[in-house]
Length: 138
Image (cartoon, rainbow, N blue to C red; front, side, top):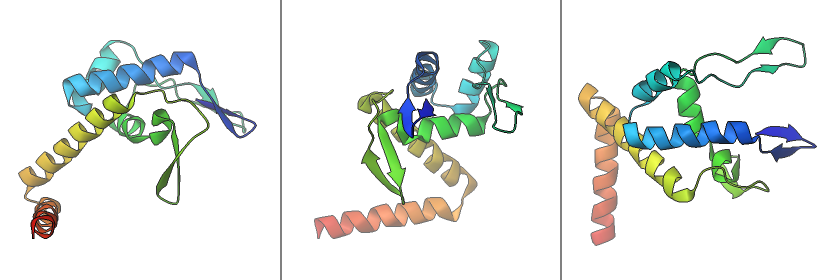
């Protein structure tokens, strides 16, 4: 996606890559595996030149790139403002069903990592989930 007159424009070549990333993550359920696969297949980030004339991108996807793509609501046809999501004027690149599946896989992976490390994050999630269940059933 690119900007023109403060509107997002769809780049069909990039759309294919983004959809591929979402589908493969849903299948692999691992950003690390996805990154290795994309690198082996020759996928690279979008090359661009900044206003200052510096070249950027055109490099293999890092885990950070992939996490940002997989969590970017722009691909769902939304924009965010002050932590709230709003329907955008652009079409969705990824279907809601695939988006929800990817977000669910990412949430489970986060919880697994937190539980494996014994972090307080997993304890807080468990307590929060348990307390909300007890309130809902009380």
